[in-house]
Length: 398
Image (cartoon, rainbow, N blue to C red; front, side, top):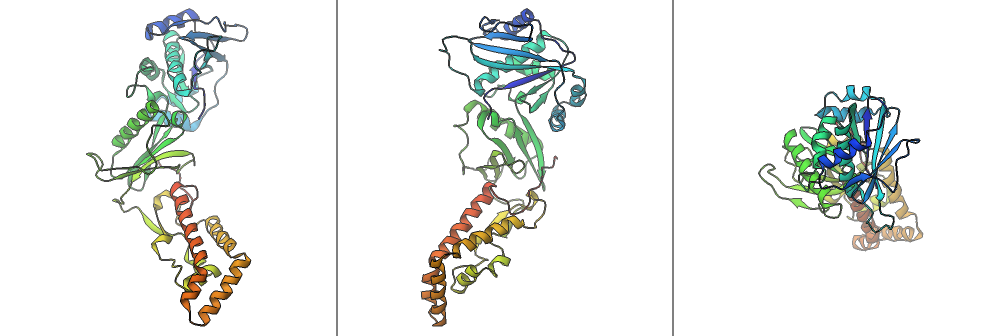
């Protein structure tokens, strides 16, 4: 999460807005805001910043007389809502940087603003700039979200509206993707408010319903804050649009390994889940510890606790990663690389030679427990996407 929301206003030519026209624009668009030229940080035309006081806080507008670096993915996402996005990006020759600074009060009595508090101020100022000067071709929010001037003019007037009317569509993207026959979506930009993005992959919904659900949840999380979100492990029952249960997990993204709140079908209603062994047969039949545990009935590679359900369409293929299996083998080998195990192995073999399977089982039980803990830890890591059994697949747009 960043602490300061920054907007980039892309211009056809390099110039600052007229200061008096801008202040008047803010007053017209947001009559409840106190707005004036800043006396704490007056404008210095030599270095071309502009400072505006809104309420008890100073806003800054800085001109950079050159275009922003081109970001292909950003403009691809922008073009889903705004077909002319690429053309606009190519027309700009300069840009303004807009941000909210700290308190305008020299005694620092005013509480420092966080990201969520700075966002409506910055949003309102950007809208006022667009209303006060021509030649704006696009706005980029926090380097991630590209939007048209028209969309900003319309929606930024609601900068201070409470949930669910705040203009969150200016601050984040909802990116659709496809997994098998399931349509899903993830967010980009929500983590600045909540520390996590959303990854929504619920079976049986069309793109419009998926987008609406993600938008609704995003707006709620922005308003509620990072500590009032959905609990890890929470389960939602079926409703009028979703006829099965939906599970919530806090885990890493399928696509970029960042933290997400994941919404997915708890029940495999679409037949997408396949079961895979955590410890594969190739290790089970060759590792000396597992061979001994299997002899006394303490390890079975076919047992449910050695199985995990995964969705093949999340991965490039079902070829196991060598690094994953090598990690399992190394963990097992560390368990037996002690004098304690050497003695236990010798005693277990002696007991088996006498036909006393129960004694051998008792001797090896601590290592069976350790293998069980390894299986549980790996299952959790796979579920949270801290590790991967297969190479993850990139998202595919619908």
